[in-house]
Length: 277
Image (cartoon, rainbow, N blue to C red; front, side, top):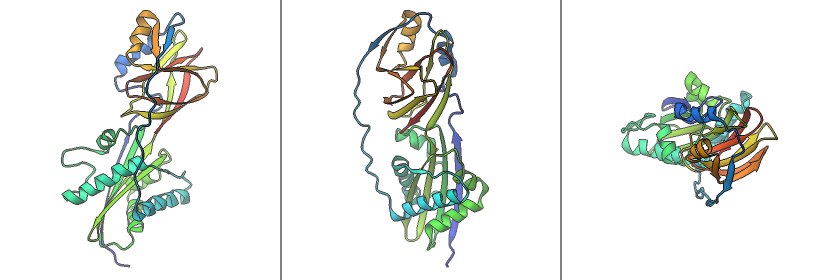
């Protein structure tokens, strides 16, 4: 087999640890600690539930080969399989095409943007992200060479085999046997411990755009409300709230917007598991 040039680099970032709230922790904590002494006056208001847009991405043979190869390696190391992520793959391919076109190889674009910025621009929300890149020249076995390079590098190996990640996006761009590969590893599950005072607690997730969310409570007696963040002040001052909906959990499916909060009614602190897409 002919051996060519291979370069690999890795990037990883944990957006939140267990027990997440939004980035403005100091502002949000006053609402967590305030609680409610009386049953609030809840008014249910409607909003659009239209789809967030279709997924029209079609993976290439090379991209599918790399996706399959990553999962084969994970399986060999007793790590769970990653689901294929179309939206992340579209971001990955666009970045590979940009590196090819502009002639650079880095996790940071010439303007300083990193994978977080690229995901935010695509309205993709996540709890944790990792990115492995590869540059290959004159390689006959694209997926095999990339996988070997990542396995031989401890940081790349750690990202590829991390049990924390749940989905994978793959993007490849080639021209005259020169190829750039971008792989994006994502965890989209938020595990949130919500303090409850006076029967109520609140949490806001750091979302980059509208998401479809599956919300699960480990306490079957918990009641959930979804409301605009602005309604927290009404709850605190006037004991009223205009909410998008009310559900008795343990499991609901709904849309969440970046400025939404989840209001929890419970007799004790509640643990939520929120999966977004």
